Amino acid sequence: MTNVRTVATKPFDGQAPGTSGLRKKVSVFRQEHYLENFVQSIFDCLDATAGTTLVVGGDGRYYNDVAAQTIVKMAAAHGFGRVVVGRDGILSTPAASCVIRKRNAFGGIILSASHNQGGPTGDFGIKYNIGNGGPAPESVTSAIFERTKTIDTYKIVDGADVDLGRIGTAMLGAMTVEVIDPVADYQALMETLFDFDRIAALFAGGFRLHFDALSAVTGPYAHAIFEGALGAAAGTVVNGTPLPDFGGHHPDPNPVYAHDVIEALTGEGDDTPDMGAASDGDGDRNMIVGRNLFVTPSDSVAILVANAHLVRGYASGLHGVARSMPTSAALDRVAARLGIACHETPTGWKFFGNLLDADLATICGEESAGTGSNHIREKDGLWAVLFWLNIVAVRGVGVSKIVRDHWATFGRNYYSRHDYEAIETAAADQLWDALRARIGTLAGTTANGLTIATADEFAYRDPVDGSVSERQGFRVHFADGSRLVYRLSGTGTQGATLRVYLERYEPDPALHGLDAQVALAPLITAADEIASIVSMTGRDQPSVIS
Ligand code: VG1
Ligand code: CO
Image 1 (tube, rainbow, N blue to C red):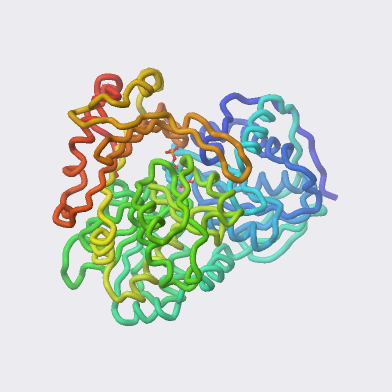
Image 2 (cartoon, rainbow, N blue to C red):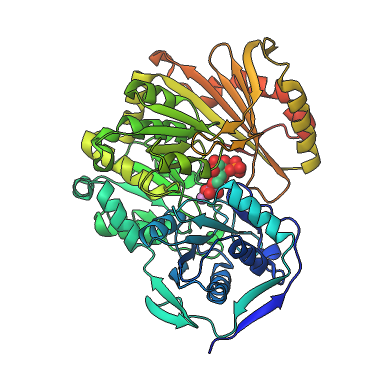
């Protein structure tokens, strides 16, 4: 008999889930009972789970293995009927979403701190997804947070670790533990959406992809799909083995942290690949690079939507599209052309879930390199790469040409995000309060000579359930159509991170070849003039420009 043990514990501070669950330093998670407290708080907030299925998996970062064992044992103590775990505790975030949906699971627990660094001195994270495969809505995450403040016991079964390294089923008390191939269900889903034969023909014709998994979770998926099913040359996937510390990589697929991809795609020689791509720690984000051209994520989602009719899974049309508020309006222009709705939501994928469930949107995107569709309820990095490959295969032209043609048709939305990472919390609070006090007075004034048309703090009313999310960032619209957005990151674990999003629309094709930072220079100055970033943070430049 497996023995269920009830362990006395105390409430912990600081467990408020951010935009993507709970993220903390590994050292915090390793405190006695810390992980158990959070898992029990999740379980305590779920209705009638007895006999149901729970999916568990993570991005393979340090502590993933320990946490997976603990969760399996707690799930058994809680009375779940079955736990489905990716082999070695591995599931990318999109694969977890796929498996939750396919297995009609009650929900899933995903172990990841996404793009945050891993290793013993890095970050760990845990997030609960509901039965539709998407991140739990705020009503659930707030209930979990409230529970962490009062929790006094958790339940776990005693006993040896379960072997998660071998595919198959075993019993833990009355619960079945099923270990699955982390790639199979996900790959099968991709094969229904994209024309694998056509993409395989593209590779057979000599097309060269350079995919950098940044030593994070997408390695096994990319090896199996690109080099396996699609026949891309060996060596297409680099850094393709998930490592507990991600091999020291910062698994955030942007031109700074994935600079190697930008470098590989610089040039026009025979040895220059045709397309570059990367994904983040947990596999839900993507970076797309053409020869000598980084595709901004805001452009990428707009281009996918403009070409969706060429791709099997989307050829019958789109219900609508959605983008997070700071994402550029390039998508809005495509939606207008297609005559479909374009929804604007706060940052974070959970806001897209209701729109997808209600068939109000089919494809969604965020400026932070998250793109996805109604095939699952998470953003999906490899899906975006396959979507691009499918478009390239059908149109027979390269990534950079597709982007330039798009600008020629729709105009170019110059776009950049400036991050000021790990600034002192007190300084960030001060800057934020000052901005809040000023925002209502900005309309009609000028900044760096540019006239401000409107300025507000973004609030969102969900069109499906009517819930309201306030204080989602400051928006400043200029009379010439340019826009500035300020947000504080919800995913950092050190100090505060200020994000400034800059956008300028340029219809004239003769002006489409500028460097984005040059095109945005007047706005960059205006952003500092409005928010006094340099004087209040002591930083004279951003830490990351993407
Ligand atoms: C960041 C991105 C946001 C994304 C979130 C989670 O949030 O800006 O667009 O949804 O990460 O992505 P923030 O609050 O730090 O700006 V992931 O790949 O960490 O699930
Ligand atoms: Co991620």
